[in-house]
Amino acid sequence: MNSRRNFIKNIALGAAAGTLVLPSCKVKGSDTKITILHTNDVHSHIDPFPKDHSSYPNQGGFARRAALIKQVRRTEEHVLVLDSGDIFQGTPYFNFYKGELDIKLMNAMGYDVATIGNHEFDNGVEELAKQIKIADFPFVNCNYGLEQSILKPLMQAYKIIQKGVVKIGVIGLGIELYGLVDPNKCGDIKYNCPIKSGDALAGYLKNKENCDYIIALSHLGYQYKGDKVDDIEVAQNTENINLILGGHTHTFLDQPTIITNKQGNDVVINQTGWAGVKLGRLDIVFSDDKKDQRLAYNSQL
Amino acid sequence: MILKSKVIYILLWSALMFGCRQNIELKSTSGKLVLVDSSIAADSAVASVISPFREEIDKQMSRIIGFSEAEQDSYYPESPLSNFVSDIIQERALRYLKANNADTLPMISLMNIKGLRANLPEGEVTVRDIFEIMPFENQIVVLTISGTNIKAFFDYISTTNGEGISGAQLVIKNDKVKSVTINGDVLDVNRNYYLATSDYLANGGDYFSMITNPIQSQLIGCKIREAIIEHIEELNQNNLKVVSNIDGRIKID
Image: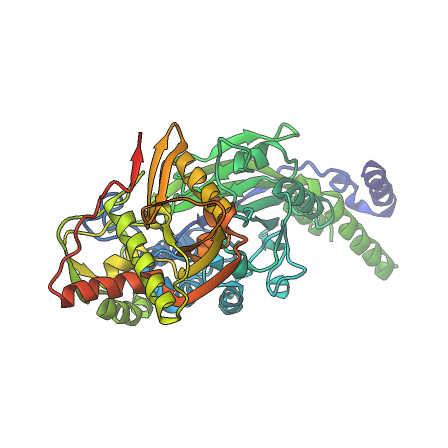
């Protein structure tokens, strides 16, 4: 990197009048704010809970969430809408319509990326494949070996999204299906270590695809007492993941959790409980020197 | 000359874009959970998409299928609801075997307590109540299991403090089997048994590993939810209500 910089610097010095600003990449630039809205374990709760519900009276509902997302889009320029799995199963909407209504409404809300949870397989892998085809947004996962699965051509390892000058990589981490899902329903899906697979892919996205920020949509679960891999462990044992949006354990995190990773950097974990009674919101601000550099360059012409 | 310097500028610019990639820096992160409640007016477009689906579901869900004398809930080691559903599985599986002249082995049934997702309310019982108890599309399956594995099954549910069972009486002491009888007879490890349960458990759900390699497996063509609905409808046709049937089939010594 240094030798490249020097090379550029030398060319710049020799080339033109641009020398005043060209060697410097450290000019303070304008900020870019990315607003992330996210859900997990919505479990087909299309409607709000009943008014007399003991835990969540009159809370949740897709039509309200849609209004909330629209409202944020009106005030924020860069919005990402993400889901961490278990979209399906839990109300008669799923028994009757097999998830089609859920996916169509998520299309209408402009979801950008989702991952799959264990309950996505409840009607079998063929039915899941049908629903993924209806989605306007990609489903990502990097630790399921899908070579023998009909999901192979329907899923992606990652999705890169450019928001302003910020390049964001979104990956998916899936829970071990053994013991959770009937093997006849999920078919032949190999489970690989989410820490290894996730960090390797996140590293690739940072170093080769030049992503500035890596988001992991995780359906692993927030924290376990036993030796099951959880989000805390992923955060502690990786280098390249910046944000983990979790699921599966139905954990309401009133404040995001901050964990120090292998390199001493902060990893943020968030999870929104379940059933869509809360919508997660994260505002992430990036300082943007690159843009400033371009302005400096343009001024030379 | 002008053209040449423009080319250099373009090359230079592309190189700089790459060279400065590290300069997108994370400055701050703030987060919160936003409560989705009645203070947020529903989006009318989305609401109108949902309406016809809800009406169709409501029409079918609100149908009254019978009555329950009291609220039936589920807990360990045995409970009204887990006994009720296990007995329904046992009865449906027996009916199937008799119809197929295959009623040749003693039978027990298993319904995992974790799989019962709500209580049966007191009074009117609707289709919706049963969907809430049993949202899954699980089917009833009859497994032929060796006596050794049936013994392993009772050993296992003694460590988990019981389960929904039918056709057997179990006494647990210090997480171990103290005694077990199947239809009144002592468990014989040298013979085979039928075990009726859900395809979910038969295929490895909830770690019942001793039943995942049965000698034979027969799907009886009936979902557990359908069996519950039909059973309550039959009770109602005979002017009977659902009653609690705690009968001491699992005891902790």
